[in-house]
Image (cartoon, rainbow, N blue to C red; front, side, top):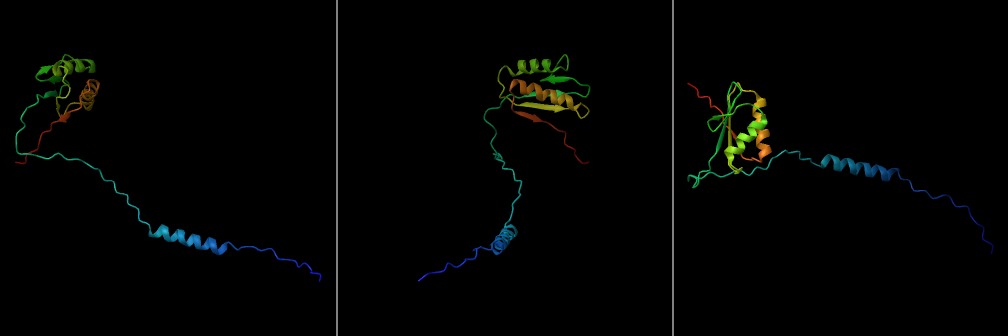
Length: 139
């Protein structure tokens, strides 16, 4: 018996239905997915107690006047340079830079003067800064 070799057709897999199914799955997951874009800040708020603090930390008060002068704990500095400001803060803090620095600036003083105080505090490593503000009281 002699077998005759038959010509076989090329076997091909049609990928078009498979690609259609993959695209449908992709569209389904894109539509059904939710995206949370919340910009929440986690803040650890301090708790208030009715007791007065047992030890009162001596704070340093910096006043910036309307005419452009710095006053540290009641003493006026001779000029407005950052180096003079650093020297004055260094003398008042006496090496204890954990004490708070309270900054009171006049409304007519320039913002540049407040930035000079920040610059001087950063040079000395002072991290506890606070600002005071005048509260408007309705008549």
